[in-house]
Length: 338
Image 1 (cartoon, rainbow, N blue to C red):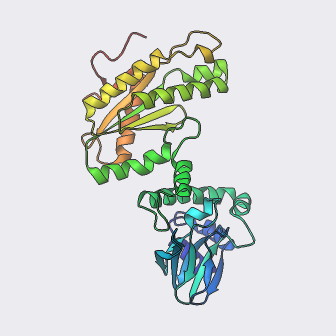
Image 2 (cartoon, rainbow, N blue to C red; image 1 turned 90 degrees about the horizontal axis):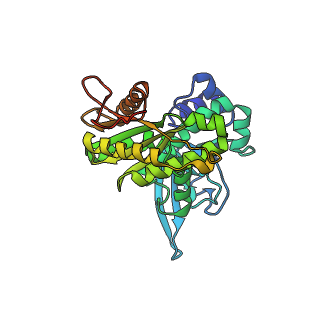
Image 3 (cartoon, rainbow, N blue to C red; image 1 turned 180 degrees about the vertical axis):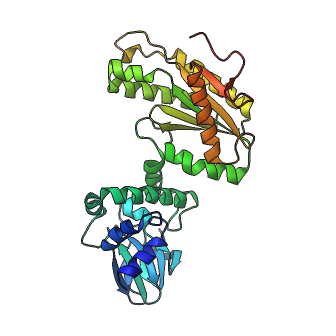
């Protein structure tokens, strides 16, 4: 098998499928074909292999030693399938053993004399796209009870945390909203409210008191969003100083009430400790929408709530905007005097 075969296999693999042809050629240069005889070990439990494998031909069995000392089959991969995505990012020893069930040819990425970091350093623009897809694939596999090992094991839980949790605030991150909301809606079909929240005057804190104070206030706001959100809700740092709250089971009225509670709580925050004692009041613009009344899927629901948040800001801020005939109507009594 040669270069063309490498590119063809990569093109069929989710992590690489979105790459342009020239970028696939770049990735192909960092791959190698390896042949294994029937029964040969590809990697062993406890080893430090950090590679992704695509099966060119053959079959691979993943097995793990149980606490009782017996061997348990976990997964079987066939021609065209890939495995090892989780292990490519993890630093822990391999949790299982892989062996060839029949004579097998694997496309291995990266070549074994290089680490993933070496490859990324050489072509950051190509592998930025690849890593984005890798995170999405890993998140998807975790969601669906990853074939290789139970989600409940500590290393998978830690990887899930790294992928879906914002380090500064401890809230879920944008990846969670993009990957999990769609699954929630399609799985349950329940009415679900969504809030998108943006402080109106946060930039003033960064500009006047510095980014350290800004980070402290972001963490304080995150605590408010988490604390005010209903039980079972998911609080998200959406991007920058924007937050989102997923409210399963909530209609638009319930979502609006929750948004109003968050708006009020932001205004009540005491942040003098971060502003050198100077009085400062945070106001917020909030957009609220609900599935399936205002959107048919997670992406459009997020877009609708975000657009309404912008409507609230353009109307002067410090209010909760709801879908309506004039898009951006506010709940009665929500906007205080500014």
